[in-house]
Amino acid sequence: MHEDARTNTGLLLYYPYRDMEIRVVEALHAAGFADLSYAQARIFQRIGPGGTRTVQLAEQARVTKQTASLLVQALEEEGYVERRPDPADARARLVSVAERGRAAQAVAAGVVAEVEEQWRRRLGARRYAALRRALAELHEEPGDVRSPPADHGAPG
Image (tube, rainbow, N blue to C red; front, side, top):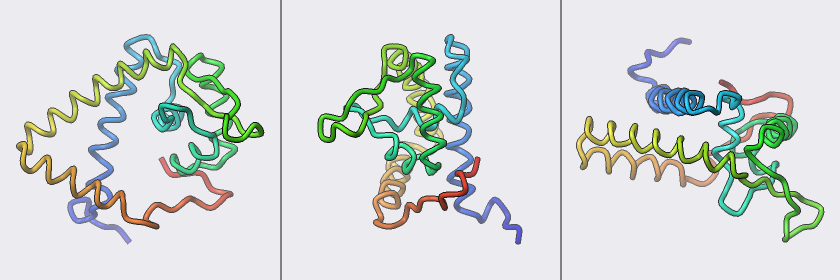
């Protein structure tokens, strides 16, 4: 079954996000972070300010724990993140952003702000604010975010 992209709301949501993601990664590469892959960026952007466990990163990125672990390992080897013991559970480790990662975050934040400003100008302030409210409401709906089966990675 093929749905026209004009009527498939999921694709209409995905295309602007994907455009932003491409612009962010291109800017990161141009700024000297050429070793950062799209898959790594998808994990990296989900690290919270106090650090995040790998299993939580996997759930948020909708990938398997094994995939997230491999991506975190590569990010650590490239100097973007560091792992440290979780103060709440000595058996667990938190992934936190390292100095190089903070520099990459600054570049990414600038691009995100630029893209969001372009969207705001295109839609107008009122429509842009309504869009953000609607998307936030959809995001907050309990049970809407499902994890992929353990033997399948996330699409894209």
